[in-house]
Length: 439
Image 1: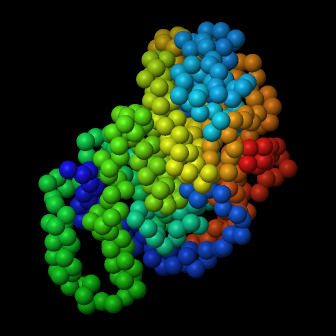
Image 2 (image 1 turned 90 degrees about the vertical axis):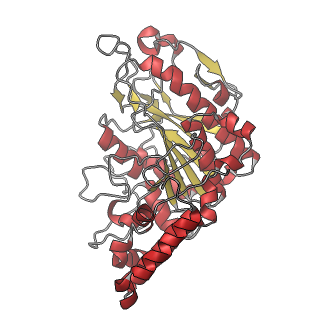
Image 3 (image 1 turned 30 degrees about the vertical axis):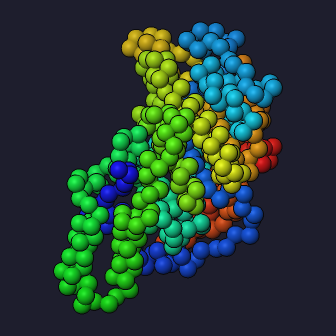
């Protein structure tokens, strides 16, 4: 039996009508939508968010000569298929794919708090500004698919929202991400909290028809608000009962390919993300299950998580390239910051790494980013930027430009405040600028 995404009426309306209460605002936003003249290289973006912060020492910026105090149990670096580039010993699959991605080893913002760092990395704006800005995914949704046309919503999170701020910001609930919930590695990929156990498609359709027949208020009124609500409802049901549900049907994939991605939640999230960009979804976030906030017993966690990340991400890059999709699909992978280069061996941490925003690493691939390169560097112990600092505004600005979005574009604020996709860089901020070395 095919895996299907069965959604109850109540929760379908919850997701499908997220913008119905803000119809007038949504119309205002659509009316103000600018047309960008920038060339589009990245038609879709897959963001792999390693929330909690991934250690750069253990992964993409190893310092094997810094000793156990910094490298802990992972004292080796391994060569890649690109001469001169080495990565952490737990990433043999990605080592064979280094020609497909580039590494930024000088990412920095100096923030060590989850909420403020995540907001900065997702918006490019400081949390000190008086406006709550939308995340990059919401901005892509606004520019690329403002009317929600397609089988699947334009901004999807697998499986839980990034969570520590409102991703849609002032753009409103219409641009909030659709979070699938559930587990794509389960026998049936079902949306968590939305699935009606044992309810067939026919019965779901019958419930919809009964609801409409008993909606006397809707039949008596003919307002624009209710018309827009009905459109949103139809879109939600199309995702439940129409061809949109097949996007989530991983049983259509060859078992050997599913094995290549890894039979775990993250690996199958990567496969589901590939299927979504094939249908034209502009922005997909893979929110790594369990996170990387490893204050305690860091190394046992890494022995489990790093191989899963290695296998799933390498398979995604290889699969996208084989299907001719990597050139038009931008993939970026990082957390909100890094982890402390120096290991805390004292109880109760027993070999943990703490929050670290002074320097960390980012992997970027496809969508106009060339592979096989390294941008910037950290010092000999990965404690500070040595060359070419890269700030969130630089990274996000590069992604926006590759997506055909001008970072200087105005966004429509409901109170009429001036708000741009990214802030203008002041003289007091020393920014390295766009990542032209790999664009």
